[in-house]
Image (cartoon, rainbow, N blue to C red):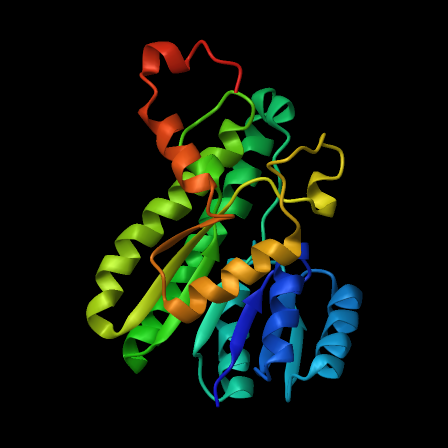
Length: 245
């Protein structure tokens, strides 16, 4: 039985998702930068019911290390069945506005490194003629806003890349799932004021597992974000640019 490769496994959303997968008996291979945190999560998931949990430390910005990691994950799991890409950084918009280097670094982490991984993963699954690729993008990618357009543009690149990849891989039996969470209460967003639109990682994780199982195309998480973002996309540009969003 093939399992799930989780890249960015120490994020709050990825950890909550992995717990659900472990509790139903899925084998897991976890990848993240923080080796100590990764080991703790792997041990917890084994206790929760996963029959096999492997892990390795990886900085996703090290593009040369991607192929070796995928080889090891494939060997451990007995083939790649499901891949969840769940890492990213919440860009400091104001700091990015003052720094070309920081802006490019954020785009590399949140978009280009993801594209590099997806290119290799897509070719492997296409060769098998089966599998599911799920990637956490964001509602922020649906339209650029002054408050987070560096982060949003990275997510827009990922979402558009996934859209093309989904069309390409559909004829190979591979599902490509774009996951678009809204506001999620995680350590990454700890400094932000919370409100009714905020979801817990557990709620988002439930939606992720459901979307993967259904091989959905695009999943807004929670689902109420779909009509909200539809309205935001339809606002005329002459009006939108005056809004405080």
